[in-house]
Image 1 (cartoon, one colour):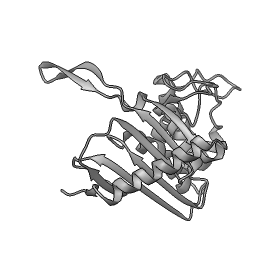
Image 2 (image 1 turned 90 degrees about the vertical axis):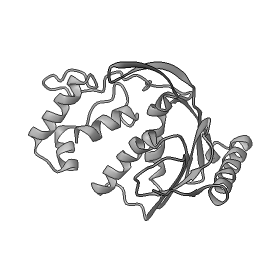
Image 3 (image 1 turned 120 degrees about the vertical axis):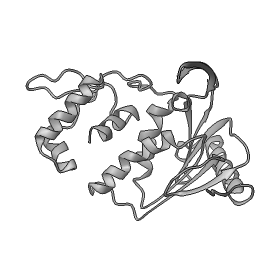
Image 4 (image 1 turned 45 degrees about the vertical axis):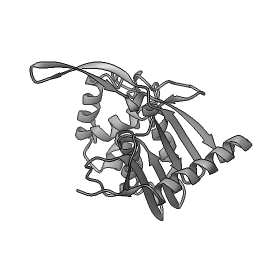
Length: 230
């Protein structure tokens, strides 16, 4: 439960300054006693994700890096992807296509609609997720294929109506492995800035970008992509 709430904050479903749902609401959603709710909120407060709880006032979401209140422009993946994926689950037949290095950001984003489906708050008729990843071992329960190249960007297609697009920016950092300090390159995908292109915008350029992105993804899926093995 604490992990689900933490994910809602990290992915921007709950934004800085938002009040947390009441303990009664959370107890009903997760079907637990209020004592368990209070314990989960305490853990989130200790992690710096919630403001101090005072008598008569609900806890509020504290400032979280990458989750910007009232921002109209592109946001980091961790802040932008969650709300958009949750909105995509509002249609009867959900379809999400993704091209990325790992499924980390998408897994966090999908955790919220999955929880709402379990709670009966969402009831899509079908859900189809297709993911293109560079070749490596992965244990998943969705459709996966691998491609013979490492993508320099990430691409999320939501129900064929919206594209979220971001570049991976390579950074150099040190990491302690055993007794050694290792210099490595990292793309820090969850911090990449997502740009949204939607058919609903009414812009011809956006509509064309969504259409061409879908065609491009489908072409990779049906030609050079192969089923994961091992």
